[in-house]
Length: 116
Length: 116
Image (cartoon, rainbow over all chains, first blue to last red; front, side, top):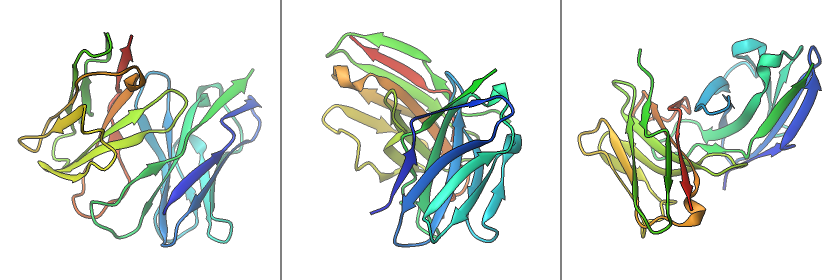
């Protein structure tokens, strides 16, 4: 069965510092991996995705993530945090090439706080 | 392009009462999803429609929850009777491609339900 685990329900960094949000998945077939962001009282918005090809993917707002098959990880990073990055971040997984019945499974989320 | 529309944004009801949520997906999106997001958790898929057919409703509590998408466009999610544990945000999402799942979902702002 597929699953996704986000390590750390809350991460706090200083403005200008590196942001690192961790995501690990389990899957017996090649995954598609996603990061979504949710601002207060809003729905989720896609930040970036990995399907096939280059393992380092870049998204909106300066975020990027690297798919590491050997580590079953898809950690999200941003070199320099900005106050506007404060939000909830969700990692999600589904499986390549499949029918519309394929589920998209979300992690439990990591709340990112930015200190001035 | 208009986004996914949901209403109402907020609803407070007593336990054992009923409630209905409405969703209008992005025009042309064949797949529609209803997710339940309990505070501090990631979204959990309740039901997935492909046009007006149900693809996955394995996690829908069918004794109290029902959903329909009669004309393959907008959808209604109903809870009757509501329980305290149904307090959550109900997120509607849609995606463009039918068949192959890409994981790129477009979310509405959600309907926050409080059951007293």
